Amino acid sequence: MTSISTATAGWLALRAPADDAARSGELAHELARMLAATSASAGPVVVHDLGAGTGSMTRWLAPRLPGPQRWVLRDGDADIVEHLDLSAVVDSAGRAVSCDIVVEDLAELPSDAFHGAAAVTASALLDVITAVEAAHIVAACVAAGTPALFSLSVTGAVRVRPAGHHEAIERAVAAAFNDHQRRDADGRRMLGPDAVDLVAGLFAAAGWNVRRARTPWRLGRPDGALIAEWLDGRLDAAVEQRPELAGDAAGYARRRRAQAAAGRLRVTVSHEDLLAWPR
Image (cartoon, rainbow, N blue to C red; front, side, top):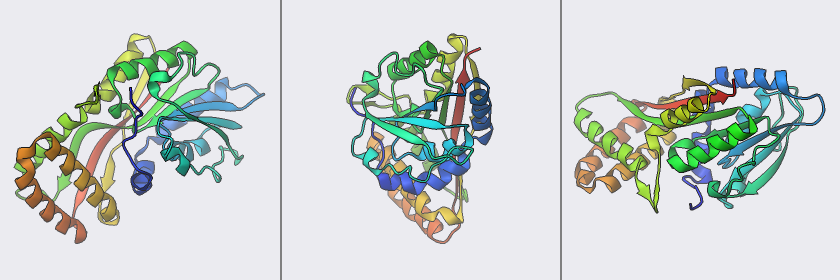
């Protein structure tokens, strides 16, 4: 498996406010309750974050969890982790958290990687991994008995308003984009919108509890820059998958960009969060 890297530091920074608004506070609270009930009085609460990127999950989740905390940030992209900045991150009691960085492909994740950990987390990761990689992560969680919180996995559902006369091209773009998300990239067939169903099924088959929460982006007038970047990326992927869409997609993009510039465009991008823990 090659390193999983689907974003730049700039894209992660642009989407961070929408991510933070979307993530499930309810599932985070449930994880915090578990950790408070099981954490020992001595030693830190150890949390492993997979595909850590620039640390957005840590910045959002750490203040919601008990401490003291030590985060093990795992990512296969050595360049992206150079942008990590957790200097201001604190736990629920206001104590600074410590962190270790591990540059490592998921294929090289040891089966006992989470031994002694209190939790495993990831954000916007499950849809860009394969079924084999997902099974590897689930098996490591189960072996360690470690609860897992995976946030912001795409489901494939998108709503763009105003509707107008765009429905036909939007249906075609949606189908092509979702196929692109499931494409075989360098020998890796990514899960795309099937990710949450598959991972939830793996945990359930292991006898674990699973809770899911809808966590959509709801983008409007204040999110013009994010909408424009998201729209361009979506259309590029759709046209890569189905080149015959290029002409219609170009005209559609011009109309939608004009609406975004005027503050009229509204976009809902569906995601799900998943929390799994042993019975």
